[in-house]
Length: 280
Length: 280
Image (cartoon, rainbow over all chains, first blue to last red; front, side):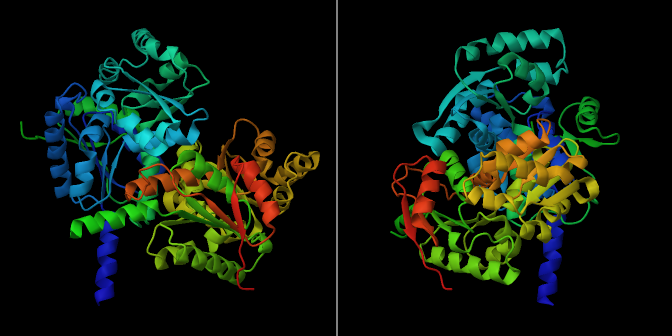
């Protein structure tokens, strides 16, 4: 009887969704990769579109907004949490990992570990929002593993998120902004570039073109999905049967805008998107 | 006082080595990648060279030999165990994970997850020893995550391990053997090839040449190091300070042969290699 109960509880755990939080729509690149790499896992996503971007926000604001989203997801009974925003990861990952009883994954470490996997010369460049770059999260992650064996060049690209959020990712303007912004980086020597912001994969073809084919471009999205996969499997939390629950997306901003982008990025015709009101 | 003790115990844990076991020298491709990606972590390695290869062995033999190596490493007080042999992973990973109180990582899952990360068409080929291919470990790992969304083609390549163990990895003969062996696979459609044996990375340039540039070749070694990195970090077991302990290698066969190969592969001039006698 006792054993049955344990198994039953376990099955219920496996069926629970993976929670994903982001400052806006950038985390959808992570969600898209989870849908592709882990098609059996249901997701519940919150994008704080109304207060995006987090990059220029103060540390206190980022902490407050992030915990508001987490509190909501904890009530939704998630089995794992992904902080799919580099800025929020840099600010709150440690304290969230300490406080929640479930695995919590940020987007900084997967990108850093993937870069160390592919780099030959251990010369790595990182681009991100001002908040992420100022936090030194990537250099700290890389040097904590490698000591002085690794060289890291960082550059803040504050113009990139607005380009993506406005959907101007293929316009000539985007190409011009990317080329201008990355100019200081091209003076440096590196063989691997981390896209340290979940919005940037949408600009990946342009970025690759600017830095040249010799540079390996690492996308947080696919690497985070890979890491989520590893941890789910390692902890025996992965869903065994086909997915029976729909993915659910919440936005604090315009449902229609979010719906359009979720559909375009995730390739799903019918997508449940709800409006979520967080405390002001 | 109590707190100090806890911290002290924790520091000692972080300083412990990572244990690696293999049927022979193939696992050195994993060790090499750990040395590169995680230079602070000390390793203790056992290669059962005297009884290599495990591929054609019975399940009972593989289980017995593997547990003998594990028993030895548990006495060496390791903080994590890597089963760096695909055949042994396929046979004993589950039971070892159940019985040991430390994280245990095999080489099948990292290769499978990396393949799912990079494949576009979800058409994946796997090559390995007869034991690994017969066990269906890769198709099972891939379909447990993807269901029917993934197609897997498997091929046993029994001639590859002897080529590598004898050091004939660049000879014309190697090229001929690889091309002949992979012929049946070239009839199939796939965009990703998993080297499902830790010896095969030594043949990677020849294999890549035979399957063509359009196929992404996944090496267990670097992907396992990546996964070890993820789990160490996620569980807070990673070494914070520079490495103070030497790596230690044991072989059940010829110390000189092992020393030569460890030196060539790991690029280390002075390498501690000891002979280890396991029960017959």
